[in-house]
View (tube, one colour):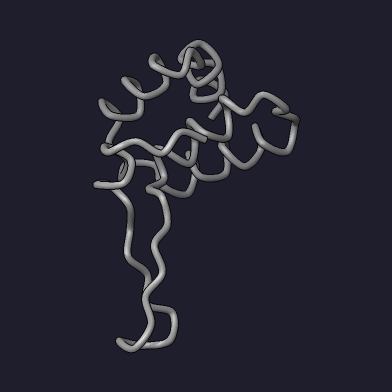
Length: 85
């Protein structure tokens, strides 16, 4: 996983226990790309990516997702998975 400035700017703040405690998570687009770009990627990683694509359908920043997938050299795989949905 590459943590760069853009990924960190797009992170999501989660407050699972109220205002006293906050966690940060990467956004769904970066999660998808990182799952697909793993060197040791397996079937579960692709399934995780598909799950997020399904659950976040219509909510994703598809321009950003496409750009990041191209940068990570997984755009073809992403396109294939999206066509399967």
